[in-house]
Image (cartoon, rainbow, N blue to C red; front, side):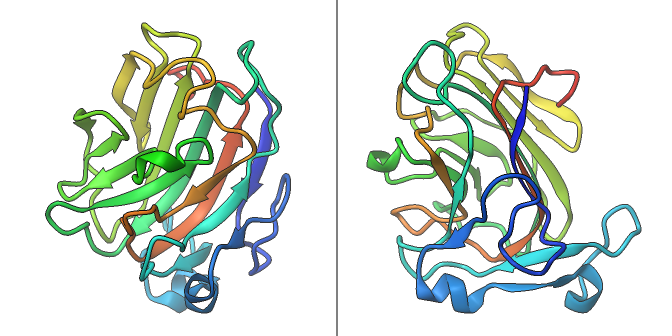
Length: 218
């Protein structure tokens, strides 16, 4: 596996530690974004240490969020990125309302669904587009490390999801097939979808790997 994109917000902007900068998709996102530390925002540190973070706003419509270039080449024998792992350290200030979700990220080939490719529901569980299955518990106002590992070439066990180092989904069937809507052409979109499933919160780190990381690493 290669880390093709990583964003840590230590410079107080959208620049990447590895790869290309992310950028806000609309004016409300751009004006509502803030950079600072956990101390200046008055939120919990991570591991007892003040950490630089980005505050993201709740989107007012389906055009918000952030475009993130993944920097990975096509893999898995397909035309798109079919094997990947997304890891993020996030703090959500409020859970989604009943019947709503919070889009973690949206693959650029999944735009037709209207929902985030992976999301958090009103109970704090992580789910994914097209499936009624959810798992785990992402509690509000607390930092969580979420890892989502996908291999669309492995129909039997191509999906694992970890929260804070615990696997809540282990070797589940891949959410779709090779070069499907769960593959990625060049970018993912953070924290909003066409149905405005958005929420305010903070992100301290985002990492994209061009392989499905093994369960032990998650």
